[in-house]
Length: 146
Image (tube, rainbow, N blue to C red; front, side, top):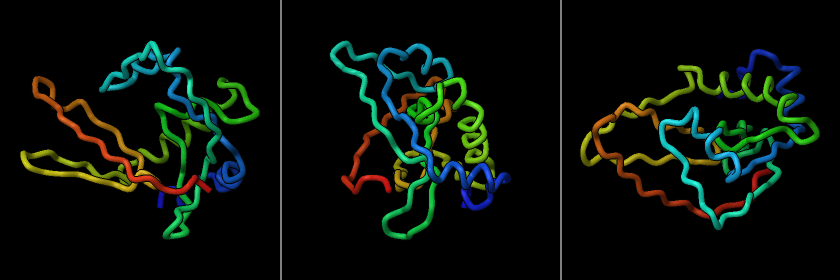
């Protein structure tokens, strides 16, 4: 839904053909942690894991187009510098975060949440200060983004 309502269709059509550099960026942990409610932990043994991913992917089951950028992990657009990439990336992040595309989950004891990571962006709001956040992540293997 978010992708089909993008306010600049020419710019969005351009994004359909772009690839982004996706990385855990172990060498930039402090920079990435600056804007996060949950902190990433540096792993001394980890190597930077870089992958090219499409900016827009097609969901394997529905055929719908989905934005495939992620604020913590999308570093830049292939063929552009980070500085050249940021204006379009920030525009896409802001568009995807609009309230009409959001689901605000209010946690209560015993609740369970799950989502399809192939077409959903998620963000943990730090609205539980003073309380313990316990998360168990399970990932189901799937196809490569197309």
